[in-house]
Length: 248
Image (cartoon, rainbow, N blue to C red; front, side, top):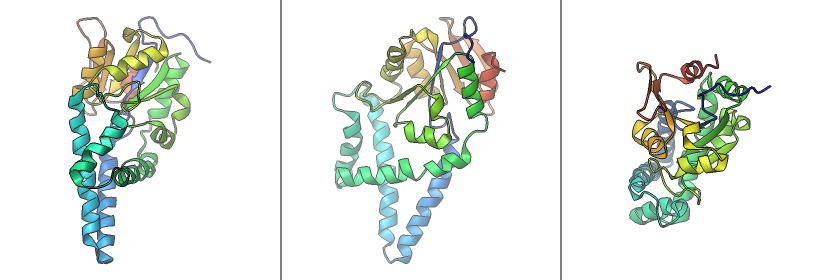
């Protein structure tokens, strides 16, 4: 049974995904080994350049996609631009690049998310729901499949990607943060954003007028308030955040 949130506590949590709801570094290390395995297999088949080309293309895609953050809110749809821009630079077809990215950056990592999920993730999210707090996820990529792999999609009532037409801006632009508030019909001061990168998650949340919690494993805990009175926290994990919010 849900209960009303404590006075002064957020009415909703907007969560980053990659690096916040699962250990991104560990997943990337596993994917690096998988890529090297694919390169070794292509070498045994007598086509070593195929594996190296895959690695080079994925690296270029990731770097050029990061560069698109500087656009702010793009006049072109980011869903298409994220592929067309690097495809031109790499001299390959847009669909060919998208197929490669979907395989290696969206589909293949899912099995590692299942294996490396944070043990406190579902209890934390169940605690939020029990406290009457709504849950949303805002990510640079569509979050649905990853939330399914993590086993928590059923607890999330809002899913948002930077490439959604209504957002069309990568973090730290505040468009996605404010769009979540609009979808919930909440003021930004009623929403706490939880992320892992202050230069992206923190900057965007502050620009939108939200409270903020940065998760930084191993960092000293800080539960200060920003000048506007909103939370400006640094905590090591989700269990610490649950305690700070009075859920455990």
